[in-house]
Image 1 (cartoon, rainbow, N blue to C red):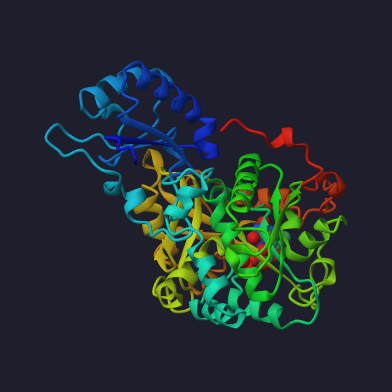
Image 2 (image 1 turned 120 degrees about the horizontal axis):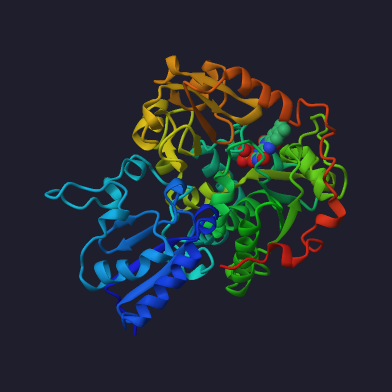
Length: 482
Ligand SMILES: Cc1cc2nc3c(=O)[nH]c(=O)nc-3n(C[C@H](O)[C@H](O)[C@H](O)COP(=O)(O)O)c2cc1C
């Protein structure tokens, strides 16, 4: 019989919270709860990144929906006594402590959360990424089941085109169209690839998605593979993302055990194998042709296009490369339909976009907003504004290929067309806020001096492909305490 707990404590185990001690916090809570003989009443769970990275370690207490921040191991005995035994909220660790006569704010009352619409991040902070059952319980693998059992490859491509999804890796190319080109291309085998290289400064969207919801990316890859006629997938993930790698490895193993990956998935007759490939952190290897060369074991250097990868990609075979966030959207587009997805965002920029909000803003973290959300609302309503009463100066969007949007353009809607008019690009989602003390000359110098694309440093030179294949990276290097 299913056990009923009176409280669930969800501890964030994203990279930021883990580095702030969230796993020690979890262990201390479990210990104290046992000591107080509450283990049959209170369940402690770890989840993927909750998004509000600046406030970690984070914990959400259900059913009260209370958001606790910056809890430390030494707070645990008092917390258990006060909150779990006496039923009194521990105000010192709330995000905003209310006045005596005010109601205790719930997570949905906090601007950082309430102003967001979650699609790619829908499971963040809610499921344990190491447990496939929790992903399945939230409609996981239903999009894949629909695609494999009820749809033809052409129908999948048409649904993707109708959704209007544009690649979230930076270029904004329509995903359905890319799949159509590859599906129509001559050549076999074909390859379905995921770009988890994420080199832009200030960007951590893809890492966070992989850490909090790895199955969504696997599911997107399988759906894409069926659409283009591939049976082999690669995830190119930078080796500096050990937690993401660990969770991907676990997810791949569990999906295979459940018959959701491998031979004859769900009895559909469709086979799919997914392999991880570890990049060595060369920015240029995020570019699609360089990435494919790198997987081939060659020096990661871009080549001129055409031919495009849809015709001649990995090992000169037709291939599709999609970004992590693009892939995380796909299961829901197939399951909930193109009309649902395109009802979000603007006419030409449909859906939502994940941004890594960082720099001189109060609420640093990972956010997801509908395309077309005004920059002001992102920086002030979600980001909480500029700390220390300073003035907003500019925001850097799109990494080294992007630009800085000045304060005078703060009302700009964040969608592909409006941002392009400012001279910047939406890019992959790095959003670095600057205040009046930031020097724009220094920023320009930083990007010119460090950007591997424009510096004289030979691109990809650190990349020793042969020693970095998924088989080559010693497991110990990515083994983590989770
Ligand atoms: C120098 C350079 C670096 C890039 N780095 C990345 C990256 O880290 N991640 C990514 O998804 N796309 C990156 N891109 C874009 C990819 O080439 C490609 O367009 C993208 O992965 C396609 O996926 P999408 O259509 O889903 O956006 C980079 C492009 C260039 C020119």
